[in-house]
Image (cartoon, rainbow, N blue to C red):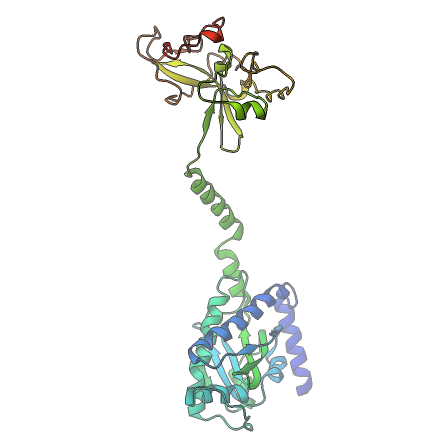
Length: 383
């Protein structure tokens, strides 16, 4: 078989086996952002290196024969390897190699560019740390990418001086080829390339490790647990009275605001914004004021009627009868939720109510339904 036909045949076999071109586009943004951020993080220890990274070009599932022409012709070419023996390549164009050497030798990147030359062992030693930093940062940046099919962490192996030996060192399989132009120190620009091995077994491992839907469900439950412990202030509202603003502004200490005895029979629990969470009826339990929550059968309170600006003095006219409608009598089997109403009054003992017995018809004040407003007595007993 001619040599020109061999790459195409192998490429078709690998593509058919790996399902080439299906779903790989979803991995491209992660590869692009991961390498860009990794280069910037790796340059931080070098001070004035300050790399300017262009857009990363990604060729997913390329064969070795297709990938080699995309590597820089000159500069450092090194083999990289993971803990399971999967191999890849890392290449630095010769301007990038010169930049790393100059910034470590003189503290800055020189403006003048040097012609390409052979990479020495000293050059490799001065570039090796940067390559390791890029690979480590790339592993961190892409660690949470679902369905990734490249190794978790690649490490520097050794430099490759004879590119003709790549077919012997690297297996003919699928690779992700990443290429990006980088400008170092504002002066020297070259290509950085990474060839990552692609393995469907890695993708299956990550896909089955932690389902994303389960993680989202767990977070919802944790969020509800946190919010459930948050304090919430509720106000027990007995009644509301509506009057013109001018009358409200004219109120002074000692003025009386009359209301009906029945107005004390309904209570609503509201938040600071006025949202009603529950309604109930006011009564007594064990000698103390208590509220029986009406639940779903509690009567809804109508909105207070609009104030009549032409009416007479509201202090002498009957007020709105019920800002909160009386609650329907609860069934005998309805659950009872009691709350001490210390803000209203503390009922003295000896009211004729048995211990533990709730009395919704207990007297709530010394004012009867027919008591005249003019006979207000501040010293009258409250029960």
